[in-house]
Length: 109
Image 1 (tube, one colour):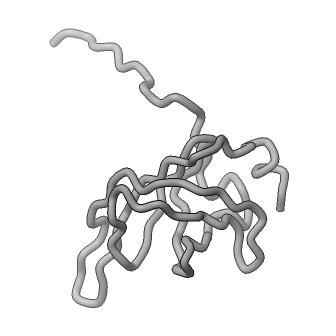
Image 2: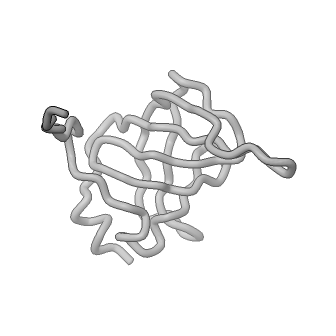
């Protein structure tokens, strides 16, 4: 079996929601709550109780109950993350229109 080198394809560093206290929850305007899985300066991976339509423009307000940051973006993709008798959870990727200052996010608690 040949050794294969896997290269990191990500353009920027990801932060787990656990790395930034209070940033694991967000509001996806027009008003639905989302759980932040991970975050980078150019986008986010989120989980919601409703389907996200790729191509839709959104505003992500990070922090709960009081938003600490707000950034506009577009939904890139969405898939079913959980399917059970009680609910469906969707996981979606967002691309931000402007870079998010990650240094401020990690120090803003």
